[in-house]
Image 1 (cartoon, rainbow, N blue to C red):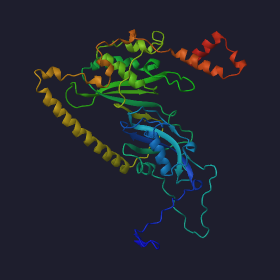
Image 2: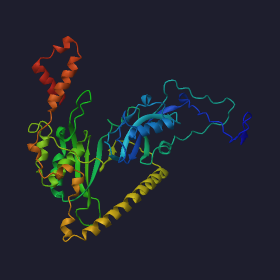
Image 3: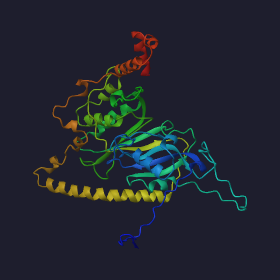
Image 4: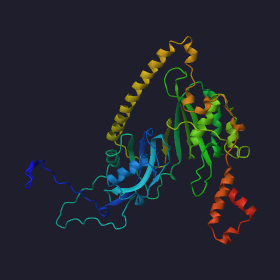
Length: 419
């Protein structure tokens, strides 16, 4: 306590404010690393940073990187991501790559940045300073990240490594209740997705990009599995797993939408082949997607990455997931008990229990006037979209460039864009 000399009023003693110490980044080498990140995205606005929302995975990771002084700025971090996930979508193994501050002067991915100026050792010092261990990047970031976002491990990588372009395959899982679905029919239909195909009718085209990219992707494997132990009934949780070299925007949610319709008997399995045939179906029919929150980016594969795992980090992540699991597991059991008690009051609860629970994930299937995809109106063809895009570019070119393409050459240019 201290007394104010002019008023005589006793005020609590105020500790002087600490001045935040500025880190001299020029004293440190940088290291190009990969980070493996897991997150529960149900309450987040997607993975990618957005101008109108700070509630994204990337925004929170960028904030943590700056706060822990692992990077000086995002612009100088040489940042890349393996993939983008939509709002409410989760991930178990999202991978990022970037340049971070390092305690090392040599090693994989370590380099001296511009203006590097390390402290010179004192001439009087006879003892050699032991080589310090590398920073524990996962522990440092997890100390400031929210509980729904966890860094699982890190790996040293060469400076040329790019999280997106060096990824050899991605694996996604979509969880859903069986309901009244015909799983065998869905599995048979899904096998037609395997191989290299043009998936333009199973995605959303991002017209905001400067150029419309190719929609050709290669699916390596698909499978349906049962999650719950015990017999198969309408409440049994199932999982659809798909592995591909890369995915398009909303591709898996569109695929699941069509597969659900097949499982409900509202589409035939050959509709998959029809949608993949861009001559028979050159533009996507108008149909809605399934919900995003049951989707998980489960794995990103790379060649020759040595992940640094630590038992303490793994146990901390398990503990965090256990707290979430207990919270939801008890709630699920309470709901199950209520449902069973109500069903016991029905005269024929065996029939009533077989509800179409998938309609919650795909509301369009609730419609009694469901219209098959082959009979629906379609959006603009990719070629027309590219032609419009090409026309927009031409308006900004000079007169010589504008007159260099006649109508036939323009059509040829449009076709080349789709290769």
